[in-house]
Amino acid sequence: MTSLFEQFVTLWVVIDPIGTVPVFIAVTAHMSARQRSVTALKAALVSAGILVFFLVFGQLLIDGLDIGLTAFQVAGGIILFLFALTMIFGEPKQDSDLKSAEGDSEPKSPAVFPLAIPSLASPGAMLAIVMLTDNSQYSIAEQGVTALVMLAVVACGYVMMRLADPIIRLIGESGAAIISRVMGMILASVAVKAVLEGILHIATTGQL
Image 1 (cartoon, one colour):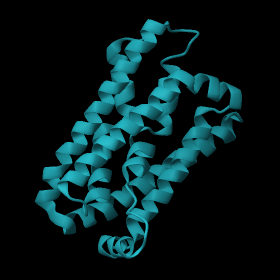
Image 2 (image 1 turned 90 degrees about the horizontal axis):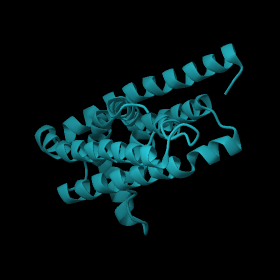
Image 3 (image 1 turned 30 degrees about the vertical axis):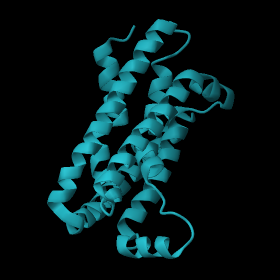
Image 4 (image 1 turned 135 degrees about the vertical axis):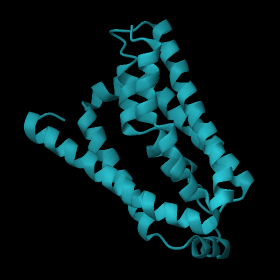
């Protein structure tokens, strides 16, 4: 059985609670403290639910559809790149808020996208949880322990997002806008790297 420490480190890297904080700051800068709290909780619950789903049904789904890690990586990279573009070139928060107020629909919450997916429940996290709970290698009890480790890492992500609240108060909306653009550039770079690595893997091995 993979040691608890190795599982924790693996899941920490692929879920990346710390890396979610700048994204959280960027997409919730215009919200009130209560709205940020609700968004953080919802993002944590949704991501936990998605990862639990992959823990239980992921192996059947991936085997049935013959999906590999590379395909997940490329798809996740494309999604992340599209979101990065909205962070860099997106309309000002004030304008989007005004349009939401004038329209009939409610403002969209970023809890599901991009916080739950692909920040916390990333394609890498989905594949990692499937591999760490392989039915042919691990018992139900061992898979239950892995589930607890995964939930602990997601809980850390929730705590990290809640700690972003005083950061937002400190830097203000202008600082958050700057962070949004800078993080958009960084996320775009990470996304492009993920896609290129996936394409290179397919080109050299011929496998998805």
